[in-house]
Image (cartoon, rainbow, N blue to C red; front, top):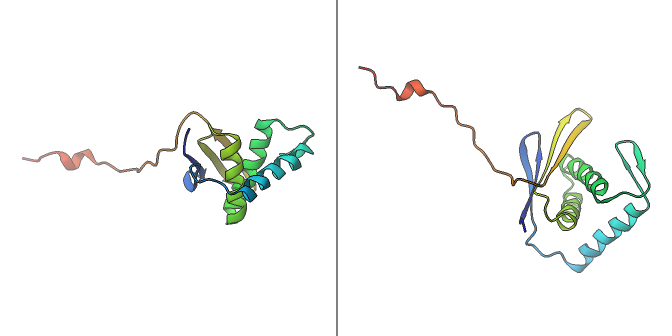
Length: 130
């Protein structure tokens, strides 16, 4: 099982959630309560969903996660990450791009986050002049 869930907003890794940290019973109960609340229906992108499946729930929780990251709400970040990490163990990344109030989001299951460093390379610097 993948041990990290990474939240990336506008190309920047913002949160790394470690699945190897065991959740205390009270936190697991809170996640179960979140599920019970969602059983009553959710509003996802302006659409009421009476019986949300796992995919709809994941998008709903991920949207709340992105909002929590942008608002620096650590308690909500922790809860949303825990829900996603435990309910979707194969989820590797939550990627979001914000444009004002609009948010485009992608849940990535097929590739781990690779922290890449961009290096500008000027080939002419390696040419020996005679």
